[in-house]
Length: 255
Image 1 (cartoon, one colour):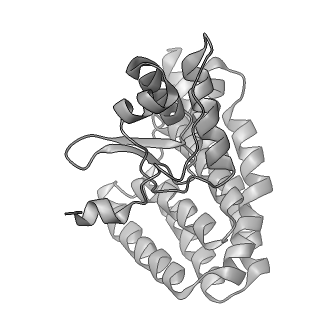
Image 2: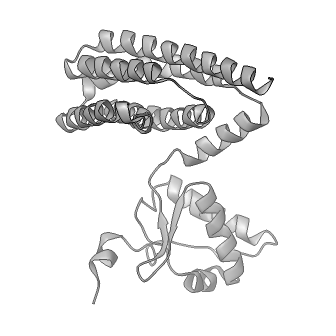
Image 3: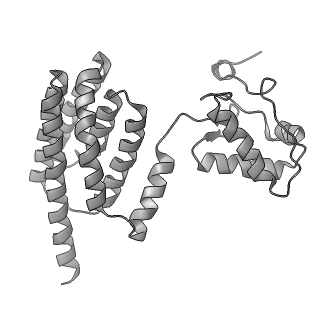
């Protein structure tokens, strides 16, 4: 008997044509076959792949090679591997993790900077806010309203920073452009990583929360131009605060 968890996912087995592997770079060829199937939408988000044993039989190769291929696909963000009774390898939803990982490496290696990230935000976020004002659904508006209220309540306790990233994620989601959402999520993740160690004052956090409220109001009122202008001012304002905090941190480290 199939469980609810089994019924939730389409099983990618008999309908998927897999070609036996006859190469020395076996795991790479396996992962390439799956990539092509995913990109051609023969495999869809939520589809469950056959077991390692079954895949090894169908590819005429070892379970070790299959496991290496699945791990590579997981690293690329194309698979989600779950453990337990209802576990297995599932085709992932499009996500920003691989982009974030690449940008994070660039940031740590000094190949990019917070200034570069801000430039990207200036080019992206105002237009995202304008699109959100035009396209946000009733559910988007309700999610943003609840988030802003939570951020305002958390402000005095010093925990409001956890809502900063969520706000920008929700606005990007409301733009209804999946490409912009993925890119924006990655850039926002990097900004949070870059400023995690900085000591931003309560006044700065109040200012951020106030801007969030204003941007939200413009989106709620379907005023795209106002949402654009406010988001641009907000991004530039945050950059000034980050730059000041970084200078202060650098000054303390040299004393």
